[in-house]
Length: 448
Image 1 (cartoon, rainbow, N blue to C red):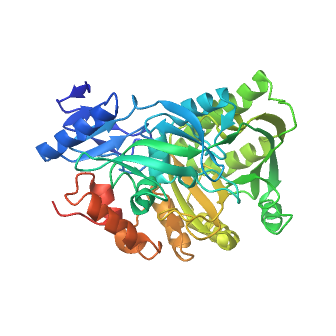
Image 2 (image 1 turned 90 degrees about the vertical axis):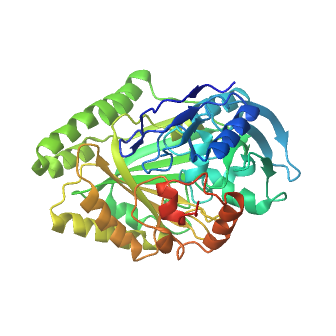
Image 3 (image 1 turned 180 degrees about the horizontal axis):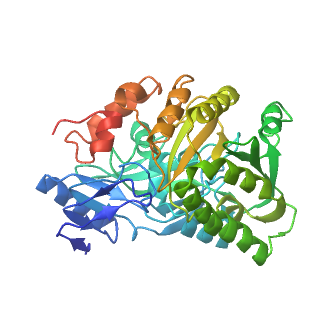
């Protein structure tokens, strides 16, 4: 039976940007339970949304109806080989990425790319377009080869590029607007080590050496950097596969000092300091950037990709054409210095391959991602709005799970397959069961 709570409950996301009071909570134990929960919501005329770990900064999971938690749909099926030779595994949509990484590692497998947080559910990561970095690799949605979806009518559909391909495209990145993901089939690869090189570099050197056949982006499997506003300094991260090597992990003390003391405990303190005394921000950023030291190590891929994130913040991230990155950073730097805005969080820059996922932020173009952050206690609206105006001039596409101000009328012009997605949504959910205020804004409302 599905555990249910019929009295109103309070829900809040990780970033504390969204909260709601669903009428009911359902935690299905299996597919049959999930189907029953969807049918019951339909019979009662209630809207239904799925929540994972609550790591979306937007209102993607908000509902005043039924909130479904897929935590118990977390199984990992057997490894299979597809007709094209791709190795795949089917997993319950509620499994957390961290748990999936551990299970795959025990089988000698891994996901080919990851972001830097592993707390999300697989369904949440896929439906919002979570991605890592690597110019030859797509985001996690691009690694999906099939989905199992429960429709608004409570029917179970299997979809893939060969079976119901339109539903497949809309379900693998669509904010859960065409049905509830029950299971996902993912392409996986043999487990691999990454050689990690993390080094402080001047921003001007990074931009100068960024592109070209031997540039930082093309010459590395995974490259990203963090720019410290009010300075010309960055932290660069180059991660490359090394199949014949043996692990050389960081020592426990060094890892604790870098990842817990400096990146979390001390970073929390410095953000509280700059919140209390904003005029110190530039000096604190300069000190933090100068205090960085290089570190080189080799470890299993998930241990390199993922970092602990315990300092709460708000984030906005836009995907832009790669060629526009220097212009965007220059304009953002100029605005920060001329506006008097005090920005304590580094700006994160990552890269991704072009893909064919309908609503992917990297759809049909090689992409650079520019992410701006603000400490939880600091005002962020003016800074984020300025960044949004800058990226709008180059056709920036907002991350579906992070803060932004665009609506369906804006997004329609940014996605060649936007109308195709809306057609699937209307067909699969004509009554708007899976809608909420956020999906109404970004996709347009469905009449009920």
